[in-house]
Image 1 (cartoon, one colour):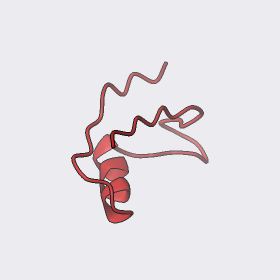
Image 2 (spheres, rainbow, N blue to C red):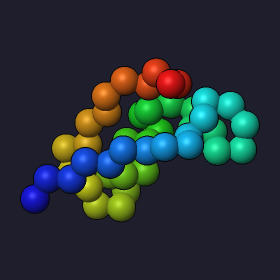
Image 3 (spheres, helix red, strand yellow):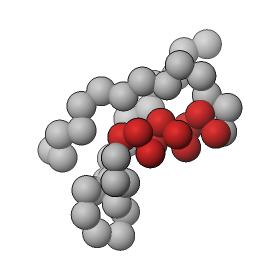
Length: 44
C-alpha cells in the first residue's frame, strides 16, 4: 500500500513550526512508515 500525506498549515516559524523536513521523516518512521520521502519545503 502506498500513502501520500499533504500537510497544510505547518509554518517554518511560530507555534506549528517543524524545523526541518528530516524531523518530519524521523517522526513518520517512528510510527512505522517505511521508505518515507519528502518533496519541496517551499513555504507557499
